[in-house]
Image 1 (cartoon, rainbow, N blue to C red):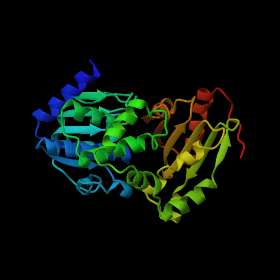
Image 2 (image 1 turned 30 degrees about the horizontal axis):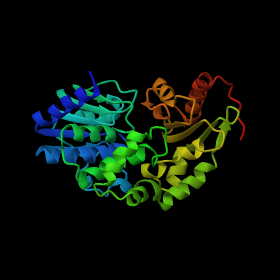
Image 3 (image 1 turned 60 degrees about the vertical axis):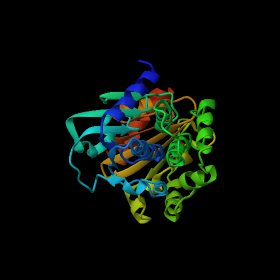
Length: 331
């Protein structure tokens, strides 16, 4: 089935149903949140009723667009179960998290995503791995359905483009992506305002956390792998939250000569969240998938139920195969 046909089927799913639960993934980022809000505006235009939600809090810095105040945190709120669901930017069904308990057993699910690890869990699936973001797929859906591209709709779409391309710097930034982004700008989006809000503004807590985390830098594999660790004690010391951990992994990846950057985030003594980033050669999505996670070739993540020391050893063992080298630490 062609991509255009998939978009047409998704359009019918939206027009033929009336009341939707719209979800994104646990620990939502700019693309997940932008896609959630864009879908809200799209459904609003169609005259549908909907509930926007995710498990956990939406990052504070992303809560500045219309409809963001209506996003529910399903880790603290209850809902009746829904029979019609839209899942956005979820690489597999597990990424919905405990919010899945609000989905009826025989629910109709529209799954829109761009992750190569997507397991096609929907009744209707649009999985376009060549898209820079889920927001780009929604842009195409809006065009396919002849929905007016208003400023209110353009802003969250641009948020998804901007954040998942790293400010239009990553390898998923194509001429087509830039052309679509330019059209969003023509709708009234301010690129400087969006960049400042989504990419540049950091909290004082972030700076304090960064200072401590940088002290944990560990370089291995002949300088090709760099890791950082955010322990539970460190996070508690500066009273950091999930927002303050965002982007720390890039400090490891961006070191000259480093191919793979990794951030280990200690959730508790036996739960470690791992963020992986690579530059050119290593498919970190494959590494994450091997450990029950997922993502993209250059950006992925997983959760390991082990101690910090054990989690590091597990990652290092897989890296030995991925990089074809022995683990030779050098600080």
